[in-house]
Image 1 (cartoon, helix red, strand yellow):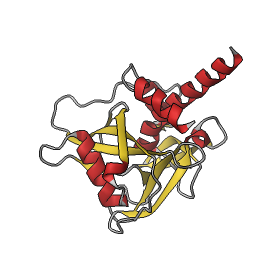
Image 2 (spheres, helix red, strand yellow):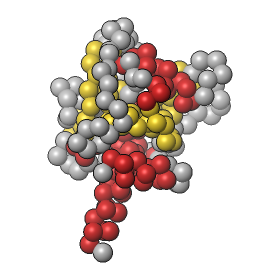
Image 3 (cartoon, rainbow, N blue to C red):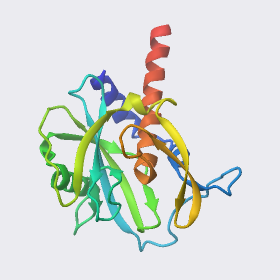
Image 4 (cartoon, helix red, strand yellow):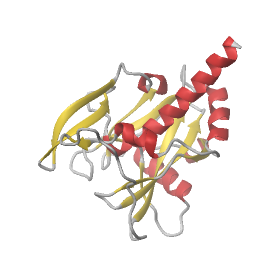
Amino acid sequence: MSKIFQEFLTRRLTKTLPGEEAQNVMRPFPESYKNPTFKSFSPEDDSYRNSSVLVPILTYTEEPEVLLTLRTQGIKHGGQISFPGGGREGDESIEETALREAHEETGIIEVNVEVVGHLSTLYVDRSNNMVTPVVGFIHQEQEFCANPNEVDEIFSVPISKLSGEEFLKQELWSLRETKYVVPFWDVHSVPLWGATSMMLNELVVLYEEFMDLGKNHQSG
């Protein structure tokens, strides 16, 4: 299944992606928005910082799983679940940035990551970052090592667990002195929400598309 999913995703990432429609499913919004509609979140100029994250998909597990980290308290976005990643340095490509940061944070062996493409970019206005999610498959099992300066925990979640309604929750949180409706996945003791969940949901939508194709093929 993992090999077929990789072949599907490699082709699918070259075509038009769900983009904001998928991302906005997981976007928090103020409680006062009775019927929330989201305008395009993008900067008016190019003063933003280019960043990238690695979306590592493990294929040596029973089914495809996505690797995530829990950030160390005391750093930016500390205590939150995220993909490994960070800001571009020098003349790095976005793939090089994602792989370097992933190695620094988790000990991922870069040469064992098969990069197949990118998900849609996401502009994070609070940090003025334009983030590109770089999708990479990891076929060979390895021991990950959390960098204690940045990561408290490294764990993985089957993509299938993020599909459907069972683990998808919604709560009212107070953020920046405003009540927000916050969608999140309840797959860890810490909610999986925010920018990471927005980027991840696009992968989930593509996974559901892949599963639907498989069902249609079997029924045909």
